[in-house]
Image (cartoon, rainbow, N blue to C red; front, side, top):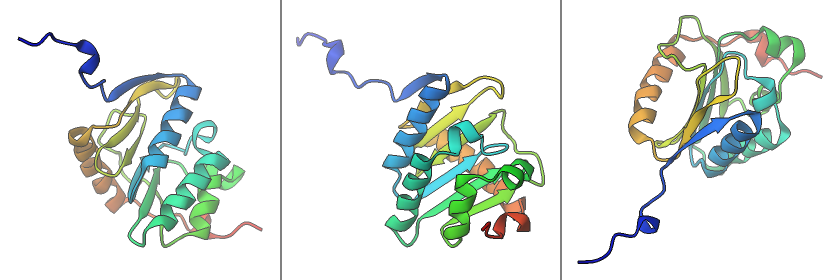
Length: 169
């Protein structure tokens, strides 16, 4: 009988995240692996996490990689995005056929403060609006499927904010 080697077992696909640096690293990793579809729900596109040139560059590359690529950003409040500006909104203005921003008109059916879904199996989940706590799952197909259904329902009832479409000079 062969001896059991715990080193040969696959590592868990779930990694707990604690702090802004962990979240930035996880977001960058997910976006770098993305192939065609990215869906992000964040109440106001949390600037410290999502308003970064590195992320805008990664999403720009993703959007241009394939003609069927789509990036959807769903927010609760567009006011801060309009007042302060945001790199992902500017990117959506430059690539409107690939990247869309919509504002929630109804509540979203999740306890997550925010989440990022990538393709069919990658998920980043933030639990707490006050702290950067949550997890990333790089092989979370079942959870991604469930959250994508929630996201898609919210997306269908969400609306574009015309103030986000104008190009800022």
